[in-house]
Image 1 (cartoon, rainbow, N blue to C red):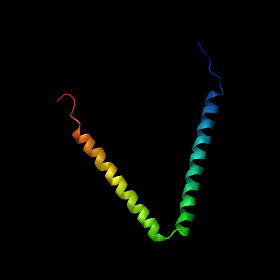
Image 2 (cartoon, rainbow, N blue to C red):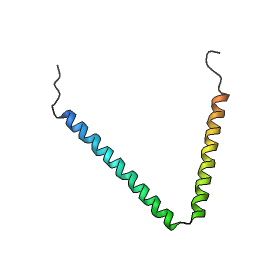
Image 3 (spheres, helix red, strand yellow):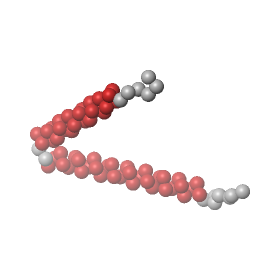
Image 4 (cartoon, rainbow, N blue to C red):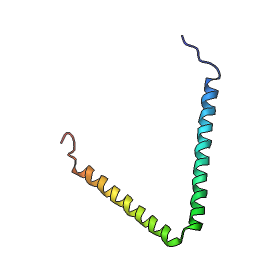
Length: 76
């Protein structure tokens, strides 16, 4: 019978908390960087980038949908 160290769950919990905090601070830094970039870069450039990204996402969704439709259904 194997015995676990009593602090194993505490160390696992601490590692999970540290990872969550690190991810949260990374996201907040990204948001702050985006806010600063919005102030520096003009509105037209940001609008153009958002429009291009929206079109790219739409194309990806359409391609994935077409791929799913073109595959034969198994068992039919």
